[in-house]
Amino acid sequence: MTQKGDSGSSFKGKNFIGWMVARLQGKVMAKLDKRALMTKAGISDLKILSQEIEFDEKVNYPYNFTIVCGSRYAGPQGEGEFELKVYARDSRVKITKLNHLD
Image (tube, one colour):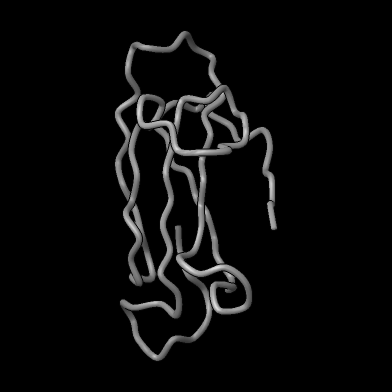
């Protein structure tokens, strides 16, 4: 996840952001389920947050994972321009749906 825009720093962004990946069949994460959580990049003000994910054998593939991205603050204080990129070694991986929740 990358924070876009000019923050005056090459390493620090304007906002504190974070993301997590969970085994939730692609459903929107209504509340944190630690048993379904696979990995997360903790809340940070870095411009780029990345984390390698090891996919386990607890699921049957193909599978829809849930990725949650967010900012520490709600409303205008937490708003900004962000970019999400997913890299995979398997050429069959694809993003099937993006939700934006206010």
